[in-house]
Image 1 (cartoon, helix red, strand yellow):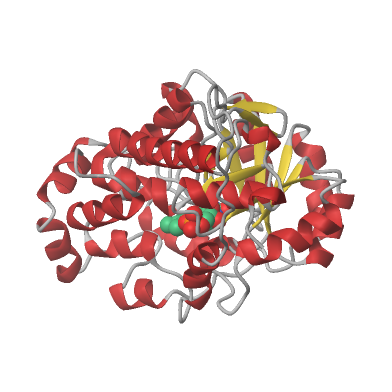
Image 2 (spheres, rainbow, N blue to C red):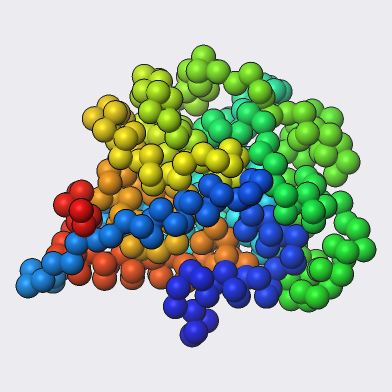
Length: 378
Ligand code: FNR
């Protein structure tokens, strides 16, 4: 990985290694992908203040997210089908994150199960919950996350129905995948990926198959997922989940000031300003453009985090400067995973760490906990 200097390099490497339909799954947004692009572009439009002759020795990126220590304020986002970017993907990413000292969030729609990830980690990870219509299944998932000693529940609120992603539709990607000759050709041209995939047994949704009622194989899973996302999810349900879980709770998918106020009233520990990486409401504003308004409205009541469009340590610094206490990366770690498994995820984290450190120093700051809007050029 010697020529890998930035996240873009990992993306190019992942594209060469991962079958097209799964690379596209990670790399796509809803409809025109306008919001997906805006997430990245709006970061680029924010400029930083260059400062000189400030003592830049003894710098620290250490911080906390919901009171938990992090080596830098960057967590791995929950992402579905991560085990399709690389065999055993969630287990590898969780290990890389643990060694780096940042939180890993396991998606409900992961390939490796909660128990798989718990079996390879020694520190607690976070679990992301989709509230399914089958509440018994939800209760059981929460119990499994408790048994695995997950140290936060990330409750996703912005997927009551699924946003439409044209690339997935064109590629014929369904949940679970149904393989046509085109797909088999795409996989055959990625022999290393195939070989590793053949060596693992984890190729389906590990949190669901064998746990949800009447879901025992791929075809029953297909109809189950199609009908299980709950379009009637409400703030009352959030309170019920909070009660059921009883631990640190993070509400993911807040993009509106009024929703942020409602979220702050739930007594959750944090919100994530997020548009699901541009995968749900295309036409919604970028996460970073909404962050200052949301921080101004609720920042004194609840910890505010951000995801969407972070592609460098500079982007992390900008989000922290605009009031985020923590940030998340989705695609950057998926590209790393696709490019090189666990080592690739570590590379993604190292790149972001280094960029964040150098940028902070050149802005004349030594401690990430002292960063505020002062570092943004007006
Ligand atoms: C996601 N995201 C997501 N969110 C969630 O709460 N549960 C999930 O299962 C998934 N699945 C998922 C799959 C893939 C392939 C992607 C790219 C994203 C959204 C994710 O948690 C996060 O909000 C975005 O990825 C952040 O944007 P960036 O960092 O990818 O630009």
